[in-house]
Amino acid sequence: MEAKFNWDVIGIVTSLACAIHCALLPLVLTSLPLFGINIIHNLVFEWIMIGIAFVVGSYALFHGYIKHHRSFLPIAIFAVGFVFLFLKQFFHSAENWFLIPAVILIISAHYYNYRLCHKSKCSSPHHKH
Image (cartoon, rainbow, N blue to C red; front, side, top):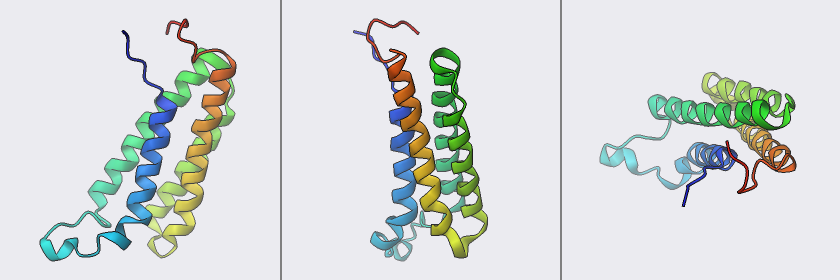
């Protein structure tokens, strides 16, 4: 049995994980600094999460574009989402104003890419990559 990864699903999961980290973790885990653990607003951790989301997303979207549907729209939506995500890192006072559209756009790009790939039958078990 051959395992097949759906990179759009992985991209959605990493985007959601980033959103949960940025939005909910500070509310739930505010006591961690008392124990010497600081992942809330930890720049290294945040940039690693952004990097993972970018690598996974880029692979999924370019794979869909090149091999299946030739639509640039998911890549453009993803790019705008990442602009918002980068802005979030530099304008901390407006962090949520950038984070919310970033997550919505990045997830939308993956979903749209997934739908386009599905229409081209790339999700068929008989399709070889």
